[in-house]
Amino acid sequence: MNIAKLDTAEIAYFDEGEGDAVLLIHGFASNAHTNWINVGWTQLLIDSGYRVIAIDNRGHGESQKFYSQDDYLLEKMADDAAALLAHLQISQAHVMGYSMGARISATLASRHPELIDKLILAGNGYNMIEGGFDSSEIYDGLVAKTDEAVTTKIGTEFRYFAKATKSDLKALAACIMGGRSYIEKALFEALNPETMVIVGTEDTVAMDANKLAAIIPNGHYVPIPKRNHMNAVGDKVYKQEVLDFLT
Image (cartoon, rainbow, N blue to C red; front, side, top):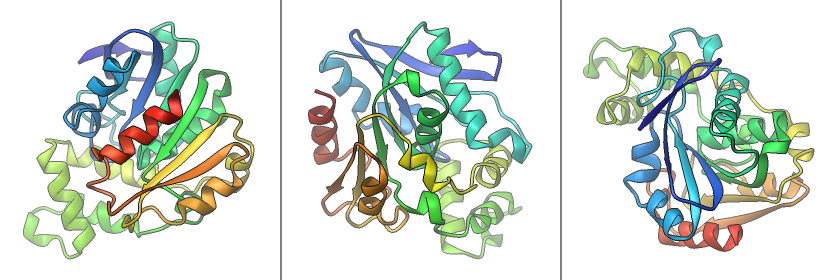
């Protein structure tokens, strides 16, 4: 991983391949390796003729850690991505975000529309507008003093996932609260890029992906059969749908 000392933050990133750029933005408590590299996404895109940039979001992976909720507003994380593209002298890229990465990607497309070619919002749906699970349960799971002190299933799941990815639990606790704000429906209604909304059919985190795609002017919904929020990431149907969409 490379480190870019941007005006916004110190951001770690993967950058390999040649051709049109594809920026990959991972989900909460994950990182570029877990979300994209280890499951074959980066190599697939490189082999398909793309330059692939996979970012570690602030507070994640090898990127700079912050401990205030205000440092994890979606606007700030989106501006990190924009600043990285400027640092790499990339004037436009395809952008794909998974889960929280979809929230960041949509915000990036709204704030910096000139940077976006095609947009892929994966692992998230209309819940970005109306809300879904209670993120305070994840926060409680992350800040608990021991594993045994976590009292909810979702808190336990995210705590163990964060520990498996060797994450900074305090930074993630700030992130889950700072980045949980709902996105205005008008933002999606004003998106200009051709947009794919792609979600597993058994995903109970991402709600009403088809409803989200319907309000995006150039949006369309694609289901990933028999996949949930965690196991859809490396799915072969997901990968082929994205390749077809980009070409």
